Image 1 (cartoon, rainbow, N blue to C red):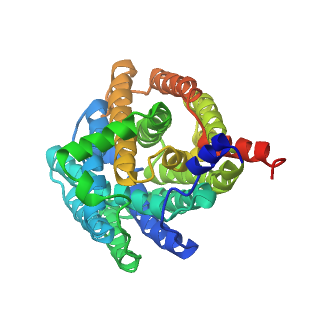
Image 2 (image 1 turned 120 degrees about the vertical axis):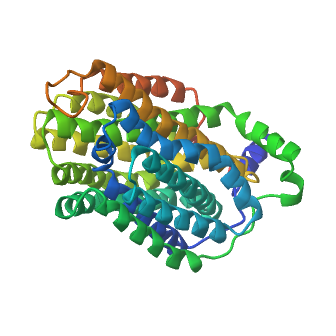
Length: 431
């Protein structure tokens, strides 16, 4: 084999010294399932709950965004903590914070306390989600990375499947505060399986990289990869959509434009989550064979089209069809986390995952704030209504435009898996 081929082969050697088992992945996935189950329980009622404090669509958006804003600020510190401390301890601390914040949100007497509760939840989520992502990246071998990370995402989305329906039923049976208390219970249960996860070391040399100079050097190295930045921007756009459209606009549109109740909205979001789960798991294995970029690119284009069609829904049936289609194409983004891991320096996974989560969570922050504001200024007022008015198509057009920009940007990124596959085909005759 030539020196050039040897260099390429070395580049595609395993990115981690940790080879986990499918049971470990399922264990980690179970906890994330419980977290997402609780988070999804409050999704159908959160906008209406925030509106009950007599605030505008923009401030409703800030209730969603405040969670992501706090998480975004703490993603990199959480990654750094996972480099020095026991990852299980960090994840358990995160779960406790999430559970505590849910109780506080359920008892919130006013809008300010609700915001504080959401910010505490964001802190807990940063500790748990960032560390769990690092954990998964470390135990996932290169050959099965897409498969295992998509399995993790699929289990995660099972929580999103059942959560909205349970949340809607609880809110209808009791009141809008009930889903928050259920969220606290299921998240607290996640501590039990977390305790039996294996203990992992850090991915690099702690003593050399935990100083300010070392941390900045690591961040510069991670951010010096154009492809890493291009891919994380594409994922930023999808996170923007997730909270801006799915969590904010869709519940408001369903309630205020179509007159649907919390159970109807929960069912619709559940249908979308089922569709996502059905496409996201097989897409991981497919991306291990064809590369990561093409599925993500197709996801961006199709999601842009479907997002625009949501506004043309006229009732529960047509909105359900639109959200099912939306959910199915979103599932094509399943290999996104694996794509970022492919592009990360193997000895700096904690920093890479922290940066990746921070950029992604920026989408969580900007989405509901920007689209909530656009919805406010373009809404059609309804005399006597307690809300700001009927949702116009303009916020959906803005979301679609951002997805198209993300697609154009993604086309410039490299795809290490596809390159490795093509390289393997070129050296087969030599072997």
